[in-house]
Length: 206
Image (tube, rainbow, N blue to C red; front, side, top):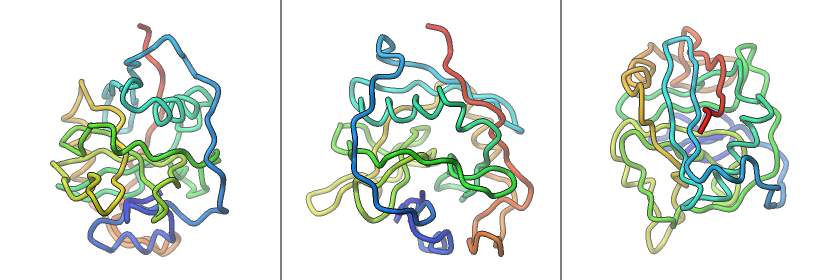
């Protein structure tokens, strides 16, 4: 998904703050069975083509979102996927595509928890979605700066923040600087011209 940060065609990425995933059939929001329920602040390690980093998730503030993310981790759905949208000083987005540009298998859409008190600040991880506020599935992004425009306000839903990078931020910064261009296959701009690969995402031992 993308920021609109919505889930339409990737070509919409050209807009200033579109974090959209590709279009998918409408799905009902559901609550999943808890994944790793005893971990209130689970930490996950990203092993990437540019190095490793660690993200701490906040289940207390974003229980639905964290559970959803961990479900993909448990299923190894993020392994061998791409950071497919990179905009320096804005976002690094992944969780949607494999290196051959086939899509990650998406589960059901989830409840938007953007009013949880967590802001789209530098180092935070948040969910990408379509215009529908409750349309997030698998795609996520890292905020490369304080993106107040992505937070909720009295008129609009925001983008749900559910954790932050606690180790290896320099790796994410390196990824944010990779060359990008237009992808004819995706019909999108801001796509890395050399793959930035998520080799593995795994839950770390408590």
